Amino acid sequence: MMHKVSALSLSVTVATTLLLGMPSNGTASVLYAQDYLVNQNLYTANQTTGALTLVGNTGRDISDLTSDNNNRLWGADPTGNRLLRLNPANASIISDIAITGANTIVSLAYDDTTGTLFGNTTVLNSAGSSALYTTNTASGAATLIGNLTTSEVYGLGFNTSGQLYGWDAVTGSLYTIDKTTGLMTSMGATTPNTSMFDVAFRLEDDILFASNAGAIQLETVNPGTGVPTLVGLYGVGVVNVAGLAFLSDIPEPATLAVLGIGFGGVACLRPRPG
Image 1 (cartoon, helix red, strand yellow):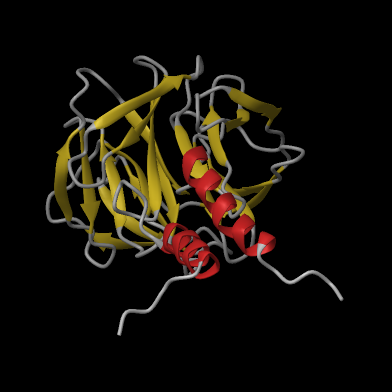
Image 2 (cartoon, rainbow, N blue to C red):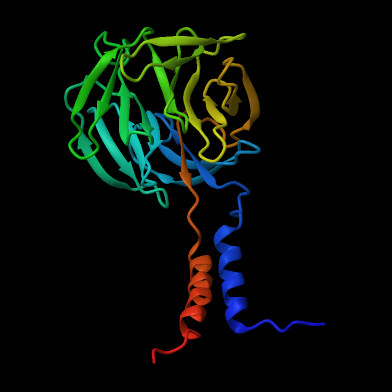
C-alpha cells in the first residue's frame, strides 16, 4: 500500500535532514590557517589533503589562532602585543585589543570546559620570559599562571576534555601542560620537529592537527606519543602557517532559507487557535 506524504511531514523531513546532515566538507567543523609574516593571509585548510583556500588578507602579522565556545575566531598579533577577533568570512578585523600584564603573547588556546582564553610568552619574543597566562577577551588583561618548563612554545591547543597541549620549537616535541601551574610533560618525539608552529584539536573527534611550517604541510599528531602523520602539502607556494583553529561549520544562506521554508511549513499548517 502506498502512503501519501503530507506537506507537513515533507517540510519537517526536509528541514530535519538538512539540519542534521553533514556539511559539504564532510566534517562538522572548518579548519582555518593563518600565514605569519609572509603574506598575512587567512585560509581554510582541507582536512583530507592539506590544500589551502584563500579567505582573505588580514593585513596583520598574526602568530596564532584559536576559537572559543561562541564560535568566534581569535588571533595573536605580537607586533604591539594585540588580541584580535577575526571575521572568518573575509579575514577582516572585528576587534583589536591591547594585551596588558604580559610581554608579547605569541600563542593562544581556548579552554571550552572553563570558558577561558590562555596564552603564552617565549624567551625569544618576550624579553626572556616563557610563561603561561589567562587573558580576558573583553579587556585584554593577562594573568600569570606560571613559568613554562621549555622556552619556545609556539603552538597551544586544548582537547575537548580541557587538557592543554603545546609544541616546543626548540626541543621539537609535544607536551601536555598543567593549566594551573604551567608544568610541562613531554609526550616524546621520535623525530623532533622544530618548525611545528601550531596545533588544534578537531571539535567532533579530538583528532590533533598541526602545522609543519618548515615543510609547508598539514599533519596530524598522536597526542599520546607526539608522532606526526602527513595529511598533505598546503599547495599555495611559499607560506608560513603559524596559526590553526577549528570553527563549527555554519549552514550556508541557501540552506538556512530551505530550513526556514521547512519550519515555516510547520508553522503554516498548525491548527488555528479555537
